Image (cartoon, rainbow, N blue to C red; front, side):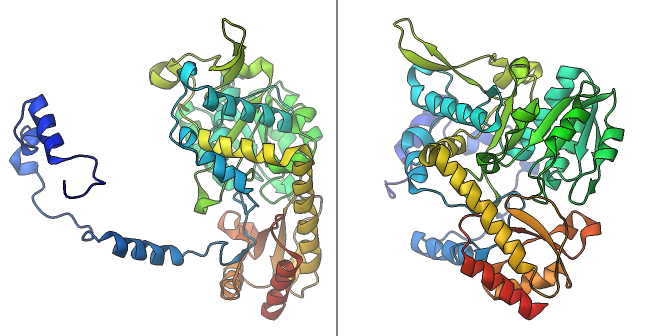
Length: 448
C-alpha cells in the first residue's frame, strides 16, 4: 500500500471486482459503445503534492476580502456577529457533525434532543406554537411558507412586499411557477410596505400576505396594521424576521402571525461567504400538520423515561417524493445545533443585550455618517441594525475606495432597486467599534 491514507488497497480492488464477476474496471464500462467513450485527457490541472496544494489553496483564500482582514459594514441578509467559542466546540464533535437523519430514535437521542431544543427556542423567540427542525435557509423557508399557505387556504395568490429580501422573492417566484401560484409584489413607501397598495392587492383570492420585519432596508414594519389587511379576507399572515432582532422586538406571534420564517445565520452561524446557513419555520397549532420538513417531539418510553422522536410526519415526506406535501426532504441540523448552542450560551438576557448593542451602534453610525457632507438619510422611521443612506457618488465607486482603506462597504441597492441608484445599505452589528464607525465616516468625508 503506497499511501496509507487511501481508503482502498489493490487487494480491496481485486476482491470487489471478483465479487461482481469481472476482471478489471474497464469491463464495468463494456456496455458503453467505444465511439461515445471519451478518449482524451480531461482539461483539469495536474495533481499537486500535498504541501504545494496547501500553499496554493492558502494563496487563493488570501485573495478573499474577508472580515478577518477588513472592517465590514456589509449585511443584506448575512451578518458578522460574535460567535462564542463554545458553539464551534460543540458542533465539531463527531457525533454531531457526522449525524444523518435521526430515523432511529434508539440511537439518535442526542441529535433529537438538540433539534428539539432548537425548535423550543425558536418558538419562544417568534411567539409561535410549533417550529420544525430547520430549513435550508431563510429564502427557502419563505417559499415553503407560501406553498403551505396556498395548500391550507386552497387559494393561489401570494401578495409579497417589495421590501422583502430580493433573493427571497426570487426563490418565491421560482417555486410559485411549479405550484401554479400567482405572486403579486407590493411597492414600498418611505422604506416600508405601502399600506394602501397592500390593502388594494390583498383580496378574497389571496392565500397569504408576506412581509419582512426588519425588512431588507433594515426598517421595522407596522405588523399590527399589516395583520388586519392580511386577515381581512381570511388569508394567512406570514412574517420573515431576523431572529436576533426578536431579542428585543415584540414577536410576530404577538401580532397574530400565522407563519414566521427567517434565517438563523445571526445566531452563531458563520458568514462562510454566503452559506450554508439555516432557515427556521414556525407556525400555529392549527397549521402544524402541514409544516414542511422534520419535527421532533418529546415523549416517554415504556419505562417512563423522557425521550425524543420524529413526529407528525410519515416517511413519505422524505423518501416517496410523489406523495410528499413539500419539496423539503432534508434540513440544516448541524447549523440548527449551532444556533441552539448560541442561544443557550447567551441566555435570555444575553440575547437582549446583543440585540440592544446592534440597535445602539447602528443608530450611532447613522447619526455619525449624516454629519458627512454628501451623505443623506434615505428613509425615516425605526430600524434595527441596518439603514440606508444616499451618497453623492455611485456606490460602486465609493466601495472600491473603501476597500483600499481596509473597509468593506455597504450593499449597493441599485443592484435590485434601480430607483435607488446611489443608495447604500449599511449594517452595523455588535462587533463594530466606535473607532471603526468613525473611520468609515472619515474615509467617506475624504471621498464625498
